[in-house]
Length: 228
Image (cartoon, rainbow, N blue to C red; front, side):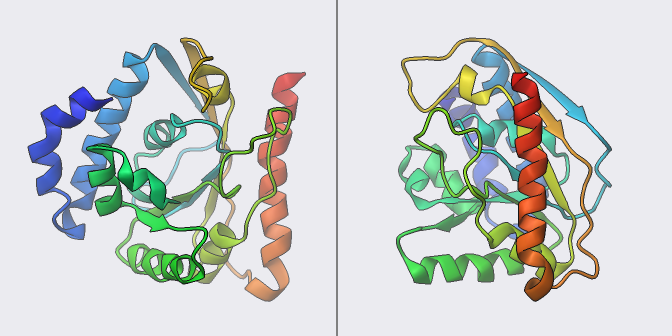
């Protein structure tokens, strides 16, 4: 994971100086992700129910089970987006340097930090990039739980900005590379991008909760069907 970052370090630094060059950084990050995924012995298999519209900003949401979720989401979307993720990852050497310069960080124990996330996300959406959020808010510690309850943030932002939500199901990441570093194995790593859901005409008061649960049900149903 570190080798391609070190090699690409000078180029990556240049394209993180300004948000105007973020699309170039994103393209390089996708290349880096492919190196990581294939280099670790995983074979990504991405199935799409429909193609993403070029130039469209999406709110990407997915289940969160592994550190490889970040790399897989970068492979899923050619449309530039920024992650909303936990601030602790900024402490990871080298990776953390770029993470804090290009992602929206949130300290879940700090109410002011959570509010600031919405302000930064709004600003990035106005520049034409999408947002990726893992709406469970973290990785469940219960091994038998397929999908934790979703938090509101992703759906609130999507409705406020009237951008489509793109649900993504990651089937194999937990099996291949879980947060328990003593288990896992090489092999296929499947992802399914579902049909994008339009938020036009929705409002926070009437639709947020219903919308959140309907998106969660799409991902949960896919995970359940995969186990049959």
